[in-house]
Length: 451
Image (cartoon, rainbow, N blue to C red; front, side, top):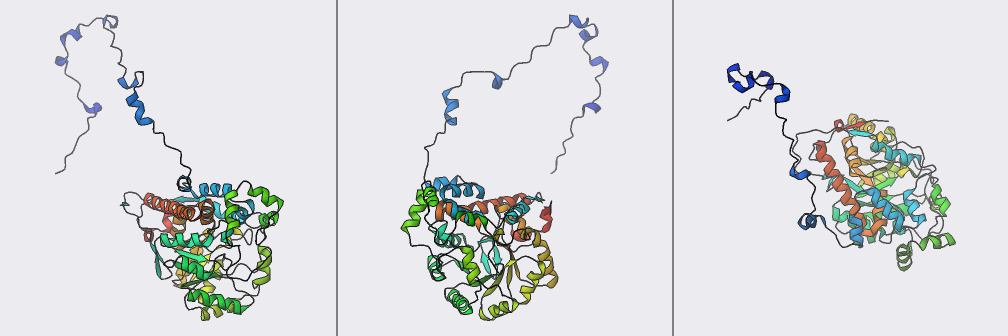
């Protein structure tokens, strides 16, 4: 039964009848004859007093200082805070190799700014008591809509390198992508994360026999997806690496020795583990740029993609897509998915921003009636960034620097912390948007403020 409560409106309350006025009021004297109103009493809560110990005891929550790695990582609430930890613990050359980009680093700055220049448009009065972040990518489930992108020379950042990344991904139920320029072999990563979903990223070389050998090894090790990167015809001008004299392996110079004095743990790990090499390649000495320019093929065409499609029987993804036309064309040549990426801003400065390109590619794929997967990387530094990308049409996202910051901050535990932060961010953002599962996200949830 519904009860209606009528509010009291002073404006409609009838005035009292004259007969209801006490007789004394009719003969009251002048205002000066009336007694002064009593002073308002001070509420007890506002009266000053000496605090009691029983009042202070609940406030004195002094905790014993914790200096363990786990406690330090737990204090990080954002990827930026993990980056700060990473910078303190890692020598300048490997940190800058991760943190830097090409030339003036304009592309990287714009990619990150693109995620900031949005407005979320939440829905209210939705049941968001349970948030489901699971999705499907390339025919298999993923517990989160994010995977780990391929990163080169990862054990240089921290000695656990690819082993930490693949095992953290396995524990989180997400894909891990090993780079051709990784410092752990295809077989070792498969052994380290036997129950994980492992992908392999391929650079096509001028020597096709070497490429074929890697493809066969990846298939034999159980990798179900091959991700071919196509935006490295030549090396980008990564000026931080040039200034730091970045070589393979890192050289011990006066500068690096002085730098080591502030990061003894990194150097202890570096010097007491197996020397760093590109595990998928033969031993190589020189700069990263020299390696790319000497080994990778600047003559690649779509015919090479046709050869890959015939050779590789698993899922084929093309990474480095920066135009709508190229996105559609690689799908026509057999790709099962694309990664909208400008190589983290590490190749062509002032390159297109993947997040800005995303709606156009989604529209083109919808018009072509293709079910090819759209993935996105570059610039992601929070779970809110990931949610925004999913809302604008991405099927999946990849993180590179974000996971490497965690790795440098604390090894495997740091990568775990990266994924925990992103998962918490995503769940909170979706709940505040009024959606409980990824399929409910639409472009209506995001408005681009500046483009």
